[in-house]
Amino acid sequence: MQWLLLIFITPYIYLLSRIYKSLTQIKYYHSQSIPGRFLSIVVACRNEEKNLPVLLRHLSEQDYDPDFFEILIIDDNSNDKTSAIASGFEGMNNLVVLQNSDRGKKSAIRQGISVSKGSLIVTTDADCRMGKSWLKTIASFFEENKPEMIILPVEMEEGMGFFRRFQQLEFLSLQGITAGTALRGRPVMCNGANLAFTKEVYNRYSGNLHDELISGDDVFLLHGIKSDPGNKIMWLESAEARVSTITSETLSAFFRQRARWISKAGAYKDRFTRILGIVTFAAVFLQLSLLVAGIFNPVYLWVFLAAFLIKSSVDYLIVMNTATRYGKRQLIKWFPLSGIIYPFYVLLVVISYFVPAEMKK
Image (cartoon, rainbow, N blue to C red; front, side):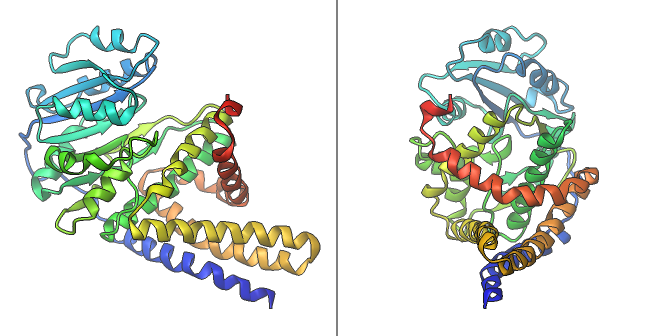
């Protein structure tokens, strides 16, 4: 009778298998056009005096005509030298530095876009790094396909120790789901660290980004655009279009970030996103429940082991596919240990979300 509990994991296996199938059909993009569209790169940042100089250097080295793009740095009420560093960066005549007249990333992005000159907006973060052909690849893809939104790849930089490798593996899984659902025409996620969309479509849907929530400037825009079947949302598979970001340095910072991510889940209106979230949480909750039940009845430990192996099999396929595409197959050796820890990690993130803000300091 206990084995019938495995039925509750079948929706997860079904949905993730469909996502994996889409990943096996992914096609690498090779630029076929010479772009000449004016782009606006919008970077909202707060207290980024350490990261900003490196980002600006990478942007200054783009092999895209500087007369065809601008960089808008919006300082979101920093109390360090972020604004001074941006304003003092030399060798870039296309750099504009603004002060957020309100508070929060959504407000900062909105302010930057309101004064932008480009018809195509590209967002990234101060702690991101990109190759020299980043802008050219994005612009070429847009010219050839004319989507309203382009979801772009993000990777985490290499780091030592299991903590950082766990973050990389989890992020590879999220990137796999991001790409796989987008390729199926049912995108559920995107990352504002590397995202492109038309200014026209942003102005059309930016009024419902849930400013009361600290997170979600990217996903709520995605869901708004997705709500109209006439809009085209595409995934761009290209190493040249990929950006890298850094891992969290401490456990507290890591859990605070993940708690911010789940804080917006209750405001999701996209049906498929909600279904995938519920199915995923159910699979994780089943594992935890079986493990606890196994303390009182050893039979449940065997059911837990079966559930763990079944779930891990499809997770492995998605992570392996993404790790291979991103040149990070060396991380796969950490997958078994990460899989064991993952259910407890999800539980801790949920607990962290409900911990009062004053206790997190």
